[in-house]
Amino acid sequence: EELSKKDGIKIENIAFMGDDLQDLSILRKAGFAIAVSNAMPEVKKAAHYITRKSGGSGAVREAIEHMLKNKGLWDKFVKDKRLLS
Image (cartoon, rainbow, N blue to C red; front, side, top):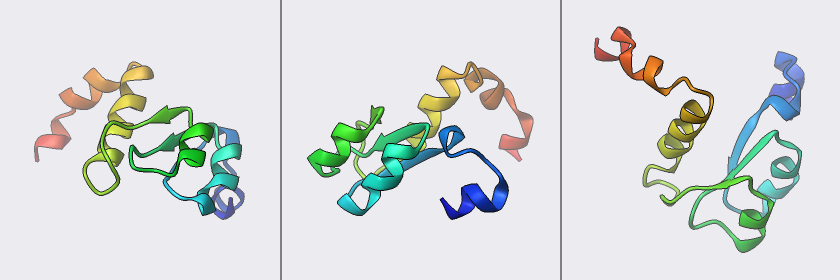
């Protein structure tokens, strides 16, 4: 929420990933709420997307890939030559 205010980005335009009860308030406000596979059941219930990977085992990468693919940006991202340097 602080970053939203500081950077002037509407909270509904922010993706947020969580796993525990303290994350519920922002998950419920975020435009795209993500829970990791080993999150608390209440967190999973509040999520728009639940990763297959658990926290600390590639869940962030999975969520980013999911968002890029759904926005039609994955191929462009993969082809970006800057990734190879």
